[in-house]
Length: 98
Image (cartoon, rainbow, N blue to C red; front, top):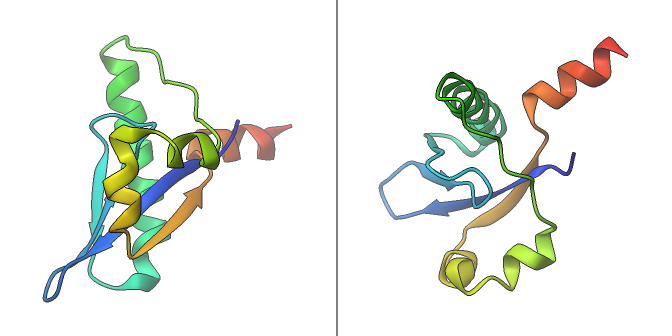
């Protein structure tokens, strides 16, 4: 599974806000930049849990370049403080078990 691309924004006097183009409805925030990976992973875990509880499929992740060229996300990428990639927590557990 490809990692989830996370678009991180930062407005003056605010936390780092995170949006996940391939995880509709998944959002997170972190007060410190050092916490964004942990918060992003936690948000993905909770989002996936909710998807499974609702009987909804977890969408496939897309390549970074495909997302970057998606007009729906163009403004978010342009205004991003940084962009990170986060492995799905459930994929990490599956790999560890193998």
